[in-house]
Amino acid sequence: MENFEKDILAGMVIAPYLQKATALRGVKRYVGGNQFRHAFATFAILIDYHYMDAILLKSSVIHDLIEDVKCTSYDEIRSIDKDGQQVLELVLEVTRRKTENKEEFLKRILVEGSDSAKVLKCADRISNLTDLHPDIFDKEYIKNMLADTKKWVIPMAEKVNKDMLFELQDLLKRRETNMKFSSTIWPMKRKD
Image: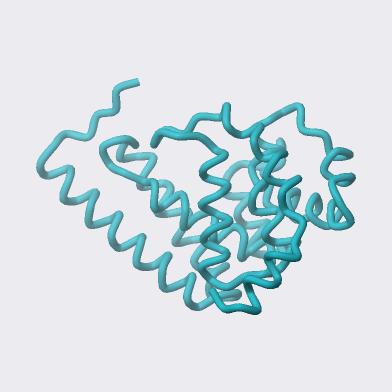
């Protein structure tokens, strides 16, 4: 991290968003841990790619809040700080609507989403693919995740960040290889 990036972060009011994100601690992930840690992973990925935009970073730590914590109040998000309204708008851009299936949701972000929404979705998907292990998820789930990434998220990355594109392509290749390798050695059965 460059000194100017450190200075930008030092001046950013992010603690209230982190506090809001603690509601995600109770939302479990199949890979273990919880959605709170996933939010931090998404935030860290953006920092790793040198994104210092306050709206984007604040949104990253609460990007799953509306979907995963049903009692989330839009007004509470709006009133967190001067950026609250813009953060809410970005979070809503990357939130799947009740009327959307997964494909419609991803297509909406690709076709209509802002560059910030595309960047946030790419960081989110990098985190998800990093956690995608064949000993935890069934083969069909993995195949669908990889197919969605190729069809919708790769084109997002092509539009907004070539380095994220490279990482997504690398993760796809590795997950496809891991799937082939693991299915030749162990049967892929998930115990619930």
